Length: 91
Image (cartoon, rainbow, N blue to C red):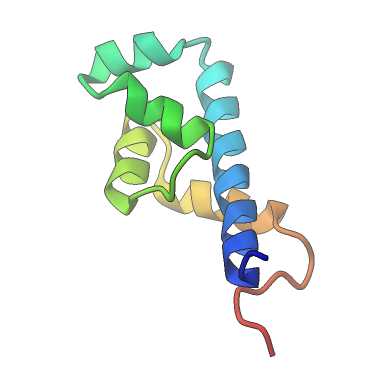
């Protein structure tokens, strides 16, 4: 059985993935276009958008910059989409 924090972290990663993908698609850009335009790896964008790995902060900041969004907007949207009373800390 997975540790509850692992399951909760997966929720966070999936929401971040959705937000980044929605933002990229709202700009009518493919992963390849975004990667080529800003000289970043398409595989990094793909991993973030598919919640395949725990995202590195630098990767999130890089993609935010490429998309022209502030990291604070990304995290505010994450906070808004998390389930009510969501917590990584079990009491």
